[in-house]
Amino acid sequence: MRGFRFWGLVPAWALMLATLLVPLCIVALVSVAERGAYGGFAWAFTFEPYKEILFSEDWDGNLVFDPKYLAIIGRTLALAAATTAICMALALPVAYVIATRTPRMKAALIYLVTLPFWVSMIVRVYAWLIILGTDGVVGRAWAALGGEGTLLFTSGAMLVGMVYSYIPLMVLPVFAAIEKLDPALLEAGADLYASRWTTARRVILPLTWPGLSAGAILVFVPALGTVLEPMLLGGGKQMMMGTLIQSQFGGARNWPFGAAVALVLMALVVLVLIANARRAMRKEARA
Image (cartoon, rainbow, N blue to C red; front, top):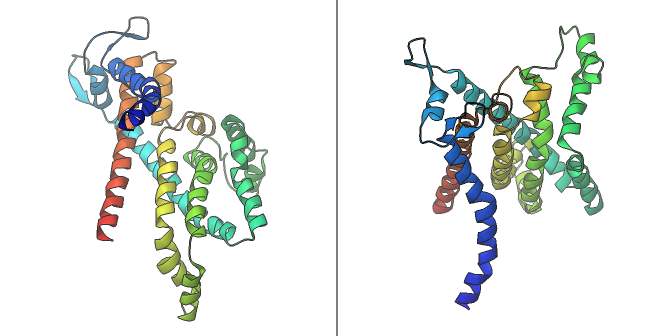
């Protein structure tokens, strides 16, 4: 039986090795290579790509601290955190409304939440180009209210696109958590003359926190590496880590530096996952 379990897992291990570990090792090797004379990379062992994240060379060839890439990392973390926070604030009431409907209405609303995934991400982001443009609904409303300039190619436009793209990933786990709530707890709160806000804060929010936490991970992690929103809605004016990696493997043809930035991004994701896992373990230990 033990041998059957071992050999039964071999296909899964082989798939993980071929699709996860091998590509990751290749990226790690490229990140410590030298930039090729005509693009690409040349096999070597150097930490220059990592040094480039923090330092640049002056006219004398000395290393000087340069925070420009740290600013990109900080901007990426800030926008990803803002996207996660907004998605959490919007998803909780939406998920609660869905969970309290009839089964037929519930199924229809869940279908509407997942409907955007049936359309290509590029098409959805391009739709926001039209909506936020000067001839779009939001753009015209902005002009009618006396707003100056365009809403496009700003951090706000990027944030709107990111929230729209990732909010279904927050709604679904929060809905699953709220659906498991015992209605008797809400009735007990009402019997104790608790207001709706008190009930939401003292009963609904703590019991749905596992769903919110899972949704936060599902939103924050892809938001760190987003590319389309900064390129299209941001107009490329606000560089983020995803667009930085894309540009290094594309026009800049600096593969080692792009691989180094990609590993730094992966390290940030791993740190977030570890922090969430440790928090969950401490919570279980207290329980």
